[in-house]
Image 1 (cartoon, rainbow, N blue to C red):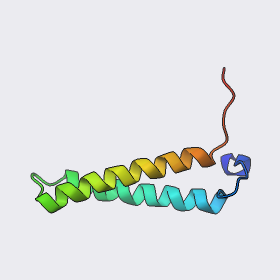
Image 2: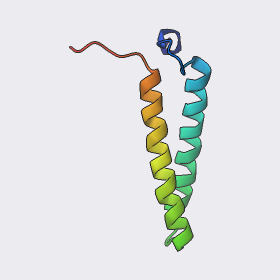
Image 3: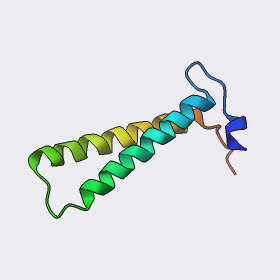
Length: 72
């Protein structure tokens, strides 16, 4: 299983990875809810932009916790 292959580093663990994945999933769900609106208020547009940046940052952190695959 991939979690068993997680690199051990100063900030990474299986629990951290799972927490980040859950946060990413929650952000994805909120963004999907906003995308279902026909139009967004200025506040919703700002929230959507913030959520997208946060989701991308979390994705980057997840990638740092995953083991690196050798180049083919």
